[in-house]
Structures are given as C-alpha cells and as structure tokens.
Image (cartoon, rainbow, N blue to C red; front, side):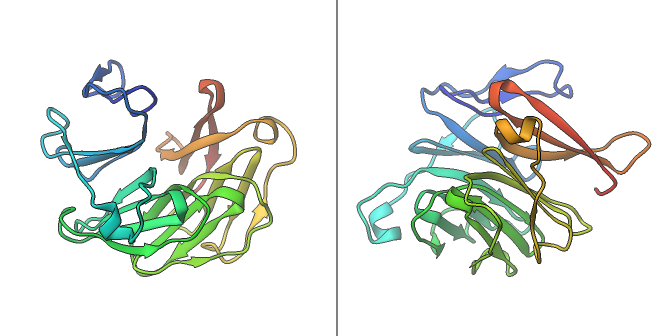
Length: 231
C-alpha cells in the first residue's frame, strides 16, 4: 500500500498487520509487484524498485531531457510490469514510456497534454485514463496508444477490466462501464456515492459463492464493493 508523505506499507499476513518499509517524505501514487520479490513504486519526483520483497529499495535516476527532449520532469502516477518484464510508466503530459531491459533504457510510447492517472493491462490490451475524460487504449502491450471517445469530460482516475471484457473506469463524480472490451461506453452514475465523490483505485477480489467483487477506494478513506459475475 502506498500514499502520501512516504507511506509505503507491507503485509505478510493477509492485511492483518502492516509495516512501513521505506523512509521518505515523498508522495507515492502507485505500486506494482510482479511476484513476491520484484516490485516498483512511483511517486512525486521519485521512482523506486525492489528485488527482495521490499526489504530494500533502490531509487532510479532518469535523464528526462534525453528521454523527452525537454527540461520538464513529469510526475509519474502509474506503473505496470508485464509477465515478460516490460516496465510501463504513465503520468503527466499523457506520458507513457516503456523499458524492455529492466529500466536501463526507455522509449516514449505516447505524449500529449493531459495527465494520465491510472493504467491497467490484461495481456496485450491496456487502458490508460486521466484528465478531461482522457481514455487511451493499446492492443500491442503498450507500444502504441489510441484515444477513445467517451461520454464524459470528468477527470478519470483508474481503470479495471475482466477476462470477459467488462471494463470499469472510476473518476471524480463519474463511473464509466463498457461490456464489450472498450468498444462502447456508458456512464453508470445516476445518484448515490459515485455521483458526489471520487474513487482513485479499483481492484478485484474473489468472493465466496459468486464470480467476485470489484473494490473501489477513494475519498474520505471510503471503500465500496460492487458485486459482479466476472473475474
């Protein structure tokens, strides 16, 4: 679990107890572990990685001028690592960049204006979401990205999708759903909590007796569960 003011917590007993793992004053935005040992954390002006389950963390240095041909240092909000080791980072300026060599070198896959706040891959298909209704799709593992039309201009904060092609995007007073793998979208916000709040992280969890549940975490420390038949 990561958060503001250097919060980087680890549990090894299913969440019953949590231990701080890294001493920092930076805000952390996202964490991704490939297995029990190899993980990445991205945050405000900091990116760190571990190869020993978080017992030690190594900060990474980036030559942003060489990577972006610009003096700006973007904030990185999302990270993903594929099964074959491709690292994908996303953040400010609609930046998506990839490394196929463990972070030694980077290639820019997408860059524009709006920030990207959330990203999710399932095999070769991936979605990235961000400011002003930004929704990008990739069908080649993040090598290239295309913008999709959606019925909102809200800031979108995270995205999740299932094996069966159900895609859910959560944002500020907005919830988008696609039942055909991103081919079409509709707003599912009519009233209640999603109409007045915001949720910045989505994940799924198994649930006894049914296909599972989608969990949303957001404003005021709220966690909302959506029961679903998909996994």
